[in-house]
Length: 62
Image (cartoon, rainbow, N blue to C red; front, side, top):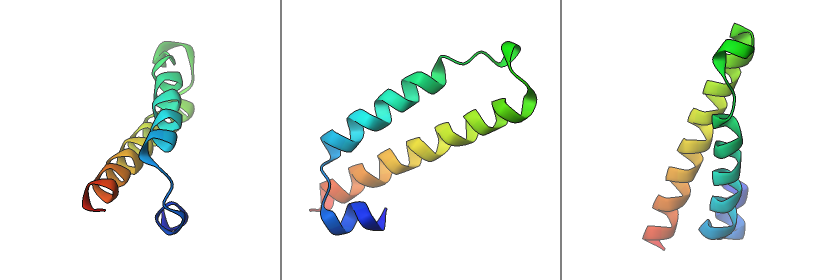
C-alpha cells in the first residue's frame, strides 16, 4: 500500500487488476479443493477487497 500511495498508482489500473483477481478467486469451488487451499483463497479475497477499499478511499481524498 505504501508503494501505491507513494507512486500515486491510479485506482482504475489497480482496480482492474484486483477485479480480475477477485473474479479468478470466485471461480474456485470449495468441494474440489482441500481445506487449507480454500482457506487461503478466502483470505486472499478478503485482502484484495481491503486493498480495493483502501485505494478507493485514497483516491477520494486526493
